[in-house]
Length: 427
Image 1 (cartoon, rainbow, N blue to C red):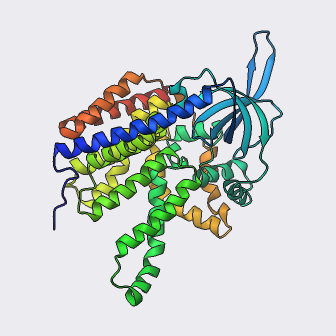
Image 2: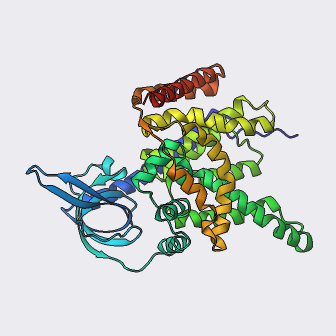
Image 3: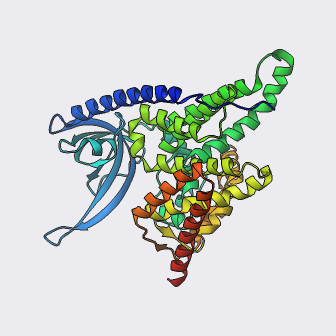
């Protein structure tokens, strides 16, 4: 078997790549800064945006009166995300495009890149349905339960779930299953690969035996996945996964190692260079972390058989991602460890749910989701300081170079698991 070569043959190659990426990053950041100055130059600006989240909020004013209003999360055509408020009577408009006057003159550049709140005045809500809204309507028609249809919308069109379901799934440890990520892209890619393989082989054997099946299938599948990515407006975790798919195949096609931390680093540097906002996205870094720990396992335990790797990786990823889950989200229940099983079964559930919706039998698997929604999780909020996560990340980086650190890493994550189980049983 021919041994695959490393991505960079010398430090000089990496330094050149790094400086080219730094130049791209600087230029992209300047473009963002110019957009920021245009937005904040005057007291107000006319902005066109899409409403991606909407919920009702009630607060008590200084005078003791109760005030109820709508909170909207929007994404503008320029790419920045922001929150604003609207009257209680503002109609449900998730997914619709809106024209509004925005007062964002006092926000910082950091807030512009991440997210910010600004007062606004709605000018016009466009009534024309987008392709995503039309698809969501088709999904809703196949389900009687609104919560169930909302879950499928989250799975297929990246629609945000309401807080109650988000909290429930977070306590069950399955939030990553309903938030479209690289995991979903991998399942979709595998499904497309299977559907494309046999028709292609049939025509290849008869008309173009000289063509490369691997390259042609990659081109077709990547174009389909790219269309889906653009349709969903490029969620950070999905963008990371698609970029890594493309980079991984290019490296594989040229005989370069794929399962390498350098491949992951290359992907992260390139994405942040072209899309600086990703550096401030928690979803993006969680996605990167998941791949990091899978690579860490495959690099240090490559002597294990494929069967053992397949069995152990779900447990490995669960325990090593647990500190992030506890620090960032904090929701935990006695059912949380069962997410290892739910994640494994999801690889069957996801393609089956897609097929059932395509044949207008979308409610085929509704009973499973109803069972999860009806579970009495008795979840609690576990508070863990960010300093522990910084220590954990440092330990993770050290584990790349020394296998001994992996056992410290496992000990730390298992300690958090025991601490979480202890707290939930005492509740």
